[in-house]
Image (cartoon, rainbow, N blue to C red; front, side):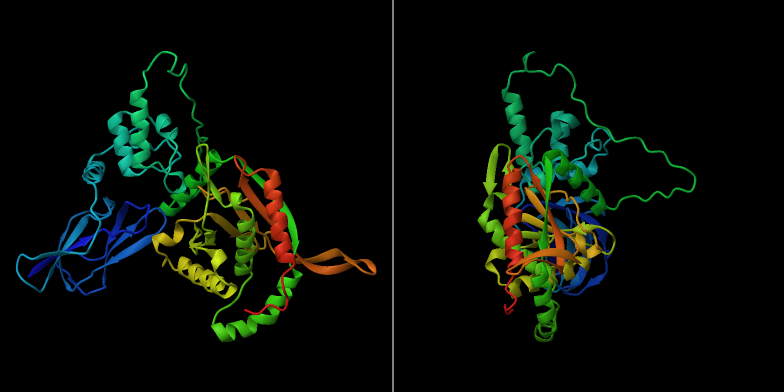
Length: 427
């Protein structure tokens, strides 16, 4: 019999670890190739690890709830083959310090003050472990600017902070004269008959990210109404033929994605990020699609290089990602790398709203409900009142680098693109 090592797979460029949420097989059970062994969770996506081979599960090396670095062996499987032969799936080597710190984190019980639960930000077990070792307080940890996904503090960020801190002499002038105050949430009391529901992992992450975004970016929201009558009439004309030919629906969403990508090309500073005092103008236009899940949570799959796709390609990407998002079939890479986000308030008949920026992006567009209303039209014979399909677009933006003028010009251009939709267009 040969031994086969099951490893924690690489699940995205920025993901260095995952949490084991549930073992689907027990020691001694027979495995078939591609049969799921364990459920794992990263920041937003739950996944299953399948067995690459047929065999018997002989050893489980981590418990449910353990945080495991990418590339670490988590289980052993006996397969038919030569004795004492060990095999493993190809994986990238993980730094020794990461393995040691994660083991220490999972093994050492911590108090409320040591696990940084007072912070509204998310910190990985590795960052928390380094902070505990170096005596970094919650206030100090919260002051570190993160360079990771959605502003998260990475190992490199905290080590750089320590290097700068240790190189500076602690003179009386450099020490704060008073402790920094931290805003505390109000204490909540419960009454008879109240129901207490604990947030699940995804809802906790959403809550933390929303608070973090409001703390990081000064939010401003601008609004504009758009006459989408041409788009409504065009879609009504082509939707039946499209579903017969392609086997799927064409909604308004891919039209908004295509128009937004065109506007972003013309106003690249809206397709950007902020890194301290640096502005990063993104080369690619990767638009996230805020998607409501059946359990009430939210996820944002990303369509990459929207400006390089035709309308048919965008439509298929929108339908595919939305369907797999609702069925928990997304890959981790499909929810990362967004440069701009669109959220559809109109799907719930809301006229408009003020969305929260998806960090580290600098803007998010909200699409309101399309409704019929009287509008004044200019004609050669003078102004007339007609029934038109009107919708409101709202865009929240980071006022650090996007001013009202830039946001106004972007929305005005997007309005022009949508209102001048070619009703003779083929798809």
